[in-house]
Image (tube, rainbow, N blue to C red; front, side, top):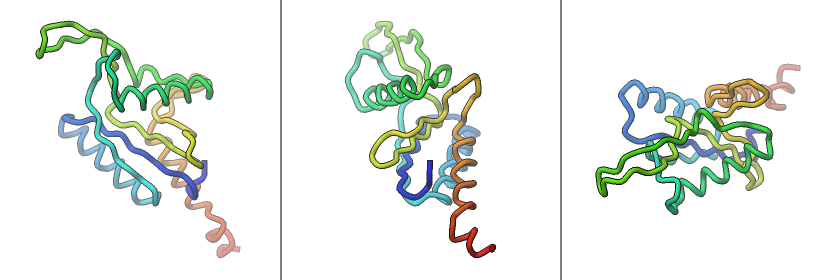
Length: 146
């Protein structure tokens, strides 16, 4: 994953406690400080699994990436029973992480954070560290140092 040519989409859960909101804000500022093409999308805590919508479409794209990459999105994206106060019915819900980062390169999804791969947890913070390392290894910086 290289910074140039990449587009980053940061997904932030709505209505989180104050400490989580501060963490989300810090991640957003950190990403915007190292990447040019950043978009931020708010999403809910959970959605009905059988409903139509952008959030489920996005999750399906992430799940397809995970399958192709040999990665696992759980436990970060989870499933559980939920209760609707609107209609009084129980439903199967997809629970979304507080923060999620999608990396697109050349128009294709290149990575999703958080995920687990080969028994290693890969967080949004890990992705940001990688982006910052790549930025500091910029060829212009290396040429100037030589």
